[in-house]
Image (cartoon, rainbow, N blue to C red; front, side):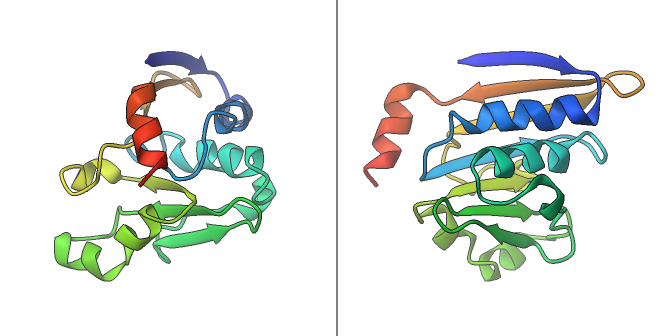
Length: 152
């Protein structure tokens, strides 16, 4: 399933993230793709808030810390691979263990290591259009794929 929207502001992007979160059931791997400033972290703020793991203002980019963890009832890991140089660096992060937990794992810049990840439950691409406009394309794995992942 593929869906697409155009967001005209960061507030709309965050609101879309809150709505999108309703579709995420742990374990859930979500790859966020887009150039710098395209709204990946803004969307993640809405997702984390929509899952009830933290307030939007508590969510920030994990660019320098690489991984932020949110929530108790629903666990969310927000990962940023922008500064990760290679698969050796990636291996030291423990990302495989995170993906195998009963959590929602949001991975920014996941396309850098797409061949290493299992097929994501959701692949979200954000693109600059003009001014504050962003095209957000959401590709969900098939229902059968998501069901089989739940049993892993």
